[in-house]
Image: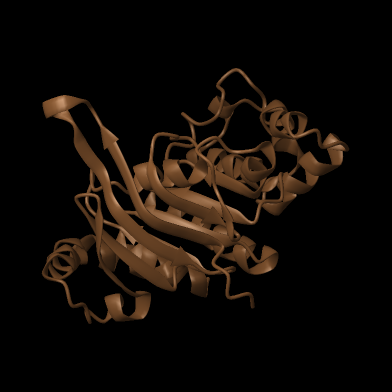
Length: 265
C-alpha cells in the first residue's frame, strides 16, 4: 500500500467573524489518513468537525494551512477533477436532496457536470450498489424513507467513482436500527471499492464501528489521536477524551449493541 497519505492536513486554520467577534473554528489541525483507511473525528457540537470536512471538500474556501489529496496540494478553489475524486455525504438526507427532482435527475446531475456518458447504465448500477432497485429511480425524495434517502445520497457520491468519501454525521438523522444498515453499507463499499473515509461524528460507537483511528476534537483542535480499539477499552491519555467517553457511555452501549446485532443477523 502506498505510504503517501490519501488525505494530509497541516496546521489548518479557519476563522469566522471580524474584529472582536472573530473566532477560530479550526486552530492548527494536523492529521493524515492513509489510502483505504477509515479515520474518525469525534467531539461535541461546535468543536469544528463539520468545518474541517467542508474545508477538505472545497466547500469552504477561506482557510489557512495545507491540505493535500493523494499527495497533491489543494488550492482554495478546487478543480472539477478533484471534486470528482473527493465526494461528501451530508448529515440530513432530506435537506441534501432536491425535493422537486426525482432520484433519476438527482443521480444524472453529477454525471452531466463531469461530462460522463452512459448515464442510464451508471444510474442503474449506482442504485443497485446501495441496495435500491429500479423501482426507486423515478420517485421523489418525499416518497422515500430516511434510510432510503441517505442511500440515494450515497449513490450520488459513488456514481462519480471517487477515491475519498467525507462523511458528515451520515446516520445521525436516522433511527438507530436504520443507522446500522447504512453504516454496514458504507463499510461494504469501502472494502469493495478500496475507498478512503474521513468520518465526523459525536457518536463514539459509530466511529468505533467504522474507523481504525480516531482524532478527538475540542475547540477547533485535535487534543488526542488514538485507535478505535484503545478508545473502546478506555485507554486514553487526555482528560477531555476521558470525560467525553464517560459522557457518551450510555448511548454508545445501546448503539454498539444494535450494530453488533445487525452484523450477526
